[in-house]
Length: 73
Image (tube, rainbow, N blue to C red; front, side, top):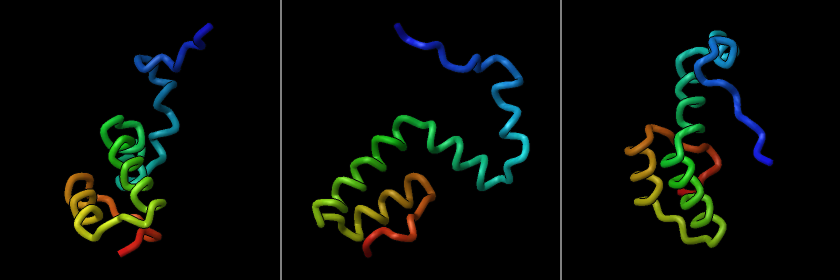
């Protein structure tokens, strides 16, 4: 049995977003974006293998406007 998710049409589903500043709201948007999740997973897997290049980090940063402070460079 699949549990239903929050009703995205309900204003109550977004009430907690009202208190976010612009960077917080942007992060919420990104973390829910499937393409961002996929790209971030690829980046994390490359880092785990020790195969993360500066070009990959720069490409990710250009595409998403995000840098992670603990990423290799």
